[in-house]
View: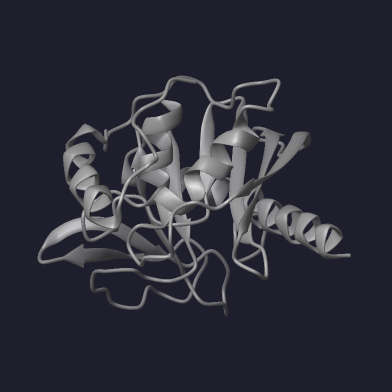
Length: 224
């Protein structure tokens, strides 16, 4: 895992770096056969001093769990909306370093290119890991959309000034949609297909849903 850039940055430098890195994000399919997918998520300690990262690996398409790792790392970058990747990715990278197997695809709880500077955490992490990633967020950061249809698989476009930056996907009838976007090396159409293949009848796809549970458990154990 190579160091893409220094993490010792001010918010102003981080914004400039986002603009510099965004053109490097690959928004078309650039991956082979997928046999192993990962889910990654983060939690923050109550005192805001530490981050807890969790990464789980699953066989694809069965989604049988292969491996789970986690890490606790001091937070060095402040909380700044739009710059969360600079706060959270150093913690996530520590967890990814512990994996025995390299995933073929990573689902990230957060935005990909559906970001004001087109470099949300899923895209930034994809560049750092040089892996295909999908941004799978519970809420919108930017862009406009119409509600998708009511059935599983219905989706609408997420647009920012006529630029297609993501999709609003209904993963289950009767529940709120999720916000998908290309992270890195995955097209939006493939992101839709792969997310539906991994959601297992719930609103949130299994990889990020289980990663969320893992970091919540790790945080709870650390508090107790």
